[in-house]
Image 1 (cartoon, rainbow, N blue to C red):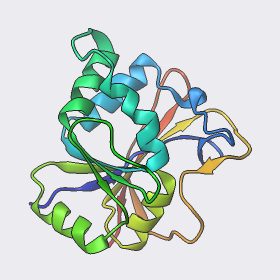
Image 2 (cartoon, rainbow, N blue to C red; image 1 turned 60 degrees about the vertical axis):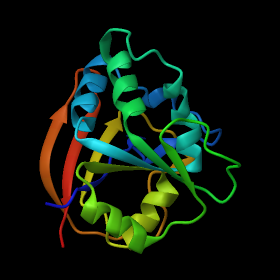
Image 3 (cartoon, one colour; image 1 turned 180 degrees about the horizontal axis):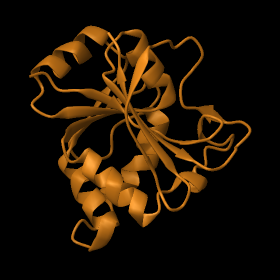
Length: 185
C-alpha cells in the first residue's frame, strides 16, 4: 500500500499559518493538542517543507529528545524523520536527515509517495498549493485555533481546488478544532 501524503497545518480561524511578521505564537499547541498531534505524526517518515516552515521547525534539532512530556516526544519524532526542504533561496539545510531541493518536482514526489513505507507530511502554504495542484495530497488534517489574525501567510494560496470528505473531528479544551478530511479522487 502506498504511503499517504498528509497536509496538517496549525492555522487561525481566518486561514493563516503565520501573521504578517511570520509569527505563529498564537498557534503553539497546548499539551492536549500537542499529544494528539504527536499521535498523528507517529506514522510519518518524511516531512516535506517550504523554506519558511523549515526555518521555524529546525529548532527541534536542538531540543533534547530525552526530556519527558510532549515536547521531548515531538523532538524524538521530528529528529527521527527525513526532511526535504523545497527552496530556491535557502543556502543549505542545517539539520540532520535533511535534503534540499531547489524546486518542486511532482513526478519525483509521486514516486516517493508510491515507494515510501511510511506517510509523508506536507508543511508550508506555497508548497502545499503546488502539491494540491499536482493532485498528490491524500488527507488534510487541520488544527484551527480560535483566533483571527487578519493577515499574513495563508495556509493555502489562491487557485487551489479539491473536493474533500470529512473523516473525523475533535474539539479541544482550549477551543482548538481538529478537522480530518480525505481528498476525493
